Amino acid sequence: MKIVTSSTELAYGCAFVPTMGALHQGHASLFKLAREKSDFVVASIFVNPLQFEDQEELTKYPKTPDRDIDLAKESGVTHLWLPTYEEIYPAGFAKRSAGALGDLYEGASRSGHFDGVVTVVARLFQLVRPKTAIFGEKDFQQLTLIRKLITELKSDIEIVAAPTIREADGLAMSSRNVRLDEKAREQAQVLYSALNAAADSPDLSAAQAALTTVAKSAAGFTLDYAEIIDEKDFSKAIDATANKRAIIAGWLNGVRLIDNMEMKLGAVR
Ligand code: PAF
Image 1 (cartoon, helix red, strand yellow):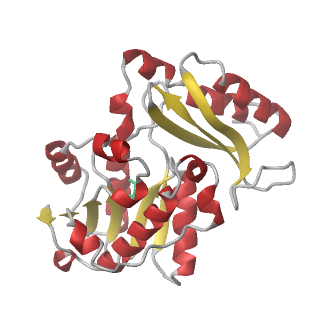
Image 2 (tube, protein in one colour; image 1 turned 135 degrees about the vertical axis):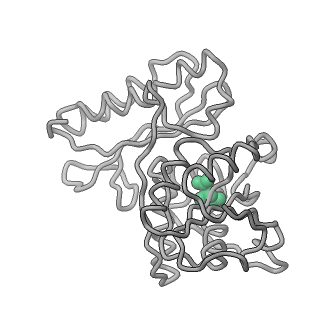
């Protein structure tokens, strides 16, 4: 694996996995998927200040550089790119807007977050020029906005959604999980329990009720939102909605956790 700091040393037409580091098995699964798509796998590690509204969150973002290098190498990354701030954001760079969808749910709680995400991803794509880019389904709103970005850019980059990788108790893997203390870590399975309770429901209204009831049942979990949405535009799902998804977010121990699950209500799981 080659470690590079300038995008001029990258292989164009690669499969690309953008990250902010603090890599875990969830990222490893994205790298492996990328490797199935191409012999050239570029992973970037860039903690993008633009997507943090709160400077303290940015400072607290976990950094594990040595482990990141080992995990990337073991998981099939051929080029690990550690860009400088100046390369990503040259003087006078243009910020992008994520539009109205960027203001809902995650965007409502983290003002400007998705503007920062689409700005950095557009710039990363411009520098890497990948054939394929892989994003985790765990950040479903982000994934939806990246697909929208591709349409706006009239780009032919193939966006691949990678399934969420979970701990044994169902907690979705996230770089933030290391900040949970022992008790909060145990309580964190409430998100997955709430999603499953919704998915096991016979219809939409029962699913919405189960999602909210379970989400509110765990001591210490401050619920932000728990909703069943239309995947297309994140409006509230109605019975006729073709693709429904439950989304949930909240805080445990001051750590923000999010998760989501496709809802095939009434189908045998
Ligand atoms: O999901 C992430 O890690 C980040 O939002 C991304 C896509 C790397 C952009 O900074």
